[in-house]
Image (cartoon, one colour):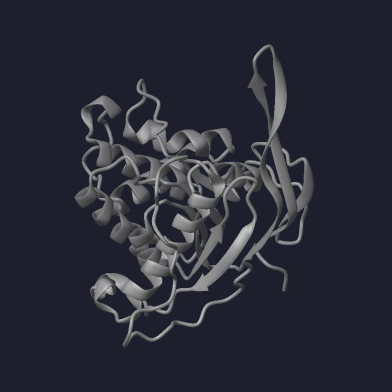
Length: 290
């Protein structure tokens, strides 16, 4: 059986204004990765490394310069009901209420009105917004608006859910609560999730596997299997003995990448020592490509 998502030798660049002319900014170069069906994969990497660009390429919103992306073994992905996208910003239509925002993508995908309404009501309830169907975005908190965005994506019942730092703009408490809600939804639906974040604790809580990509032009540097048992909302993952070891390793790798990239010249990020402390066991990891 083919991987649910297979990315092979992917490259993408953009024009970069230089004075009166343009140069080429290579964002992704020869990046390869795979995601299996029902897997929850989290992608982390330095700021500006092309994580959002990668999601847009997988969704078919922009074309690659070279390489290929296969969805269920089929080339040329395109936006549609098979893929749902939750963006960094809420992207809600302020003139539509909660119900209308959630049903909108169903309508443009030709889902009949009755089915669209029933499905929207179901997911509005599942994200904890029952009773707010007639409210407008301006009447909701930031956390509630992002729940609308999540309900909108889930209402399509996509096989693949792409999530681009969906909780990054929220306060810490709301973000942690929504992480748990997402875990519960995913545990029940078991669709394939590709989730981008800068938050290492979020990555370790959510992921089956973490894919670490390098600084621009990015490629996959390492893949780490997350060993914590599921369901993870039933206990404190941070109390697991492997947790601080994995978190420090991820932070050290990222810090080293930023240091080598020269993104913050003159800033001393400190030594990049990834060895575990005395008494700690090293958790096996996959695909170290450094």
